[in-house]
Amino acid sequence: MGFIHSLVLTVHILVGVGVIVLVLLQHGKGADMGAAFGSGASGSLFGATGSANFLSRATAVLAAIFFVTSLGLAYLANGHSASASGSVLDSANVVPAPAQATDAPATSAPAAASKAGDVPK
Image 1 (cartoon, rainbow, N blue to C red):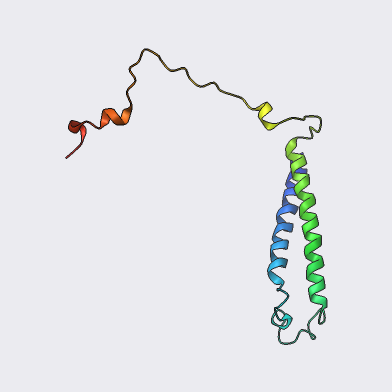
Image 2: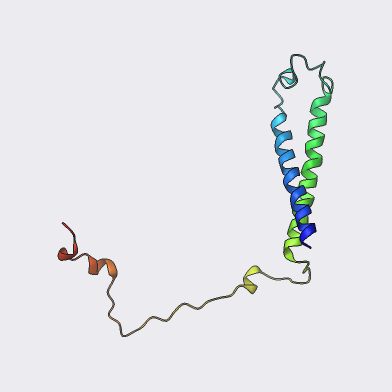
């Protein structure tokens, strides 16, 4: 189980870095495509409009893989217990608050420390 979790986590991280790189490579609709690939966009590797299509499709594929690996990691973290339903709070260990003594005098710490003789000069 540890090997599968490590493998899915490694793929998840690599795909996440790939999505970040592809998003940073893309330009907005108003940006000049020639700035991304040198002086002329028509002389680039993908052609005049091929680079935008390639980058957007590659980003969509990596985003889909990222989504699938996210679901896979959530499934692996759950421990394959699909039959366990309910809230997270149902399995929480509730610790009761300590009981306060009723015969102790009710003084607050800031009021006791605010005497004139306790203040350093």
